[in-house]
Image 1 (cartoon, rainbow, N blue to C red):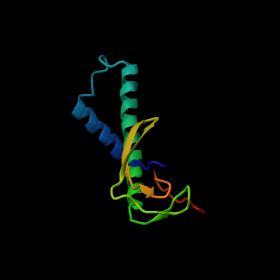
Image 2 (spheres, rainbow, N blue to C red):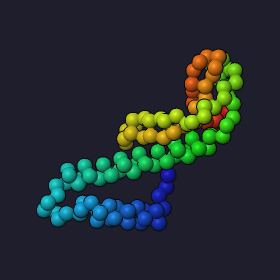
Image 3 (cartoon, one colour):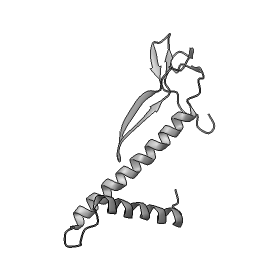
Length: 121
């Protein structure tokens, strides 16, 4: 992803707001470099996790239409469950949570999350 100058400017403005709201902007004498780096990594991790979570929620919403799909084990029709299932995964940048449509095969008695088709599939 290429960051445009406008997007970079807006991101810097968000960081300035974060500093103002949290009191993170301290005098140079109060802040050691290691503390600054820790704070920057924590903020970066939060942004990365939020970006992944938003993308996963968008993917799940795109697949939320009620369509019966074949079971990956037996191939029989598997209808979607009424409610999306909560999902979570621990990433390198933090925990990410979202709700995803789940299907249930009555023959296999197994729930599964249909894969997103890739180009060429």
